[in-house]
Length: 192
Length: 268
Image 1: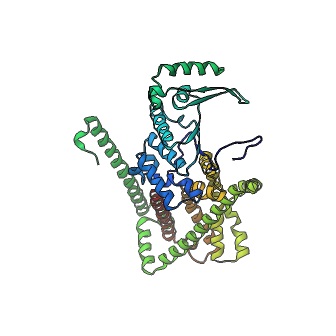
Image 2: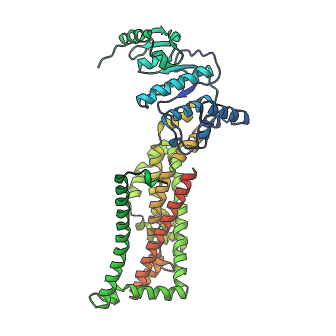
């Protein structure tokens, strides 16, 4: 990654993983081939990396579907497959650009629970960009509120909801969840 | 596939109506053809139309049997078919390759844009006499005419498809550090397979146009030659036969492409 100006300090040499708004799985490839796409492009396809992809598919319940086409999978499964595609190249930093915004509300809650669990499991630092305050508070350990353009960091909130549970869904039930929600809501200057 | 017992009465009614409609369509299609041929035959035999000028189905069949038995029909079919397929294949390859080049280099694409637009609207058959002067009165002229009729539209439609490739899918490859050849191979090409097959379907008709016009002018062999020669000696049954054979050939080629497409897409 090269910044246009200024300095970029990352404590890792491995490239960042990136998740887009839609899963962008390729319909002409099987789920397995989709998951291997990043490895293939980086010319890192070898028995060890294929083993790793198979392990991830198995761990996250997709090994029975590895020879299926993306259109045969549900929205949540597709998003999981897209995440495995990103994780296959072993990034140490994960950038999520509104990865759930293309999903309907129910699927969105379900998938954010799943994806959150996977990221925690694999112990990867993730930066999630979102317009959904509840999503930010329930999924993240720190929330950075940005100003309008040109974006600067307005405030940093350390979210401490671990007492209520581990999953985003459990955190949403915390009394403190609403405090954080209201706090951040007031800081966003929304002009409709 | 479906368990009839679990279907409600409404569903059954719907399926029945659907099947009934399908039957009506199939029957009407067949009936329309038979009715047309019968009417033609009847009018010719009763003298409403002049059989000498309009020919009639029975005369066409007689002439088909005669030309099949002396092998001349198959010879002309083979000539036309080989010219069409050659022009079609070369046209598709050159067209797709050019489209790839233009996708690769936007500057060249922008420079050539107006020429492509003009060439696309130009009736390529107008170039046929020039090509015959240049290449001579032979098969290569016919193939070149066929190629020219299909190549421009291939370039334009495939290039359009390439340009409209989902930019997020390209971004995905870039994020993984992919190079431009990889973007072409992994995203642009596979996602445009349907576009290329559509181009093929259009090209098959256009190649036939090119070949027939070429054969009209070169006039040595092939169904185009057969049409021109037979019409000059007023053998209208042979003209009609050639046209009917052309229609069947075009339909069969279209079917083959569709079959290959289905096989390709299901495998791909």
